[in-house]
Amino acid sequence: MNNQPSFWRRHRALAWVSGIALFLLIVAATAISILLHNAEPIVRAQIVAALEQQFHSRVQLDSFHMSLRGGLRAEGRGLRIWPPAEVHGVSVPAAGPSHPLISIDDFRFRAPLHYSSKEPVHISYVELRGLVVDLPPASHFTHAAGDQPAAAAGDDSLKKALLHFKLDSILCTDTVLRLETSKPDKLPLVFKISNLKLTNIQPTGTMDFAANLVNARPTGTIQTSGTFGPWSTDDPGQSGVQGQYTFDNANLSDFKDIAGTLHSTGRYTGTLRELSVDGVADVPNFSLTRFGTPLPLHTDFNAKVDATNGDTWLQPVNAVLGQSHFTVEGKVVRVPLSAAEVAASQNPDSDPRAEPPSKGHDISLAVNVPQGRMEDYIRLVSKSGKPLLTGVLNLKTSLNIPPGKEHVYQRIKLKGKFLLNNAQFTSDKVQDRVDELSLRGQGLTKEAKQKDKSDLVPVQAVMQSSFIVTNGVVSMPDLVYQVPGADIALGGTYTLDGGAINFTGKAKMQATVSKMIGGWKGALATPLDRFFKKDGAGTEVGVHVDGTRDDPHFGIDVKGFKHTSPEKPGDNTPDSGAAKTPPQQQRQSQ
Image 1: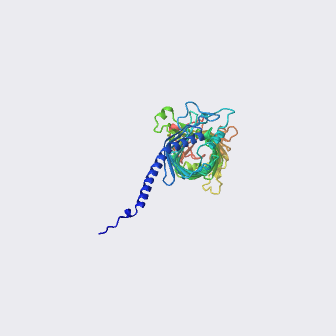
Image 2 (image 1 turned 90 degrees about the horizontal axis):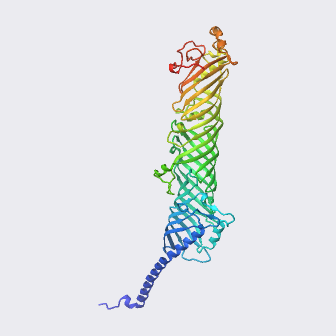
Image 3 (image 1 turned 180 degrees about the vertical axis):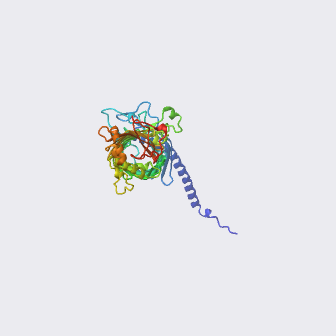
């Protein structure tokens, strides 16, 4: 039988030491726990005091906890920083804004255990979730003349802060930047940022940033980086910002009636309230969904953004559609809902994270096409992609598209003038008639009667008119169509939906009726010449154009005679060529 004493009997001193160590460890852990528990309100108070001195604002922090896992770890919830109320030279109305200046759902950071009063506490990173920055309008901040600038006061208070921090980076998720406006008829501007990283944070208040955004409309990804700061305490909206962005795979079909994939890059500089943006945008497959013919669209733009209300001034946009250059200047403004519509909205404006409800955008632009190709613009409104007309287009017009649920072509309003040089129809049937009209107008009946006109140079016409577009109808009251030997003045309408044409007017020819007819028939018609000569023209007759864009009908209205639709002057076969116009469309020249 083994009567050897146990290990602990033989090493009683070791047992006592181990027990005491364990007891001390328990006591130390308990003491640290009690210390941390008691220290939490102290540190919480110091954090609140430091933020109050930095922002000169009321600060609220719902909860704050610390632990010693891998260093000093801290986390808090419900941090709210209200707009400044006690800044030198700055006052906020008694009613105050309805939302905090800054709110954070929760935050966490880690710091080393060692601390020197001579050095700031080094924190490698701070994580923020649910950051909302809600900037009141500039009118909420009033400045008293002669008072100490708020920025200087902020610098002094930082030096007196009980705790100083050195931050390497701040990581933010689910961030919302909301810029309010004091104008009752304007909407706030809201930026939703999925990921935001702040680095190189300087004592002067400047920092670098990199952010990723998912744009709501048009749907696409925005990547941006730059420099922010210093923070302007007396009006945070005046805080400086500059950087660059890339906007990829933006789906333009999110907007009604247009389609294509947009890619844009650019730079911006200014303040949170007022930005200047320079960039380029490309849409290789831009189209109108009603027609579906894609064309490449490239733009170089400069825009001024009033971030207090979201208004954007384009000054100017240099664009190329197909091979046609044009410029655009103007503004794009969001239209707010009425008070009753806001109250009934599913997304009320009272929530700072919510996108403010609106009716859409009101677009007011001035468009200038100095030397465009007519075929580019016609392709855009053609399902086949084949243009009806070619030529060099000069155009100036105002353009307005109010918000609404109707198609764009029903809402668009245009008012301007155009000049089309070297105009030629792509339809051989139509162009042959134009060529024959020109030849007969010059009295060249022999050439007009040739069956093979391949050796003749196609006639190039000139068209010009003022125009108004409203409710999907193009009105041209003073359309002038000129070819060698003939001047035609028309007035009428063209319907965008369906292409219905309805124009009437007068045609003046250089040649007389007998010269236009030619041959022995022309000789017989010589007595008629005096009836159609007028104002220096050899022949003046009433004309009309009706039908549709794809099937136009041309006719002559002769005073004192029933309406006829001859295919060409001198053809005495009334049924040849074009279909007869219904009786209800018969008209006489005035």
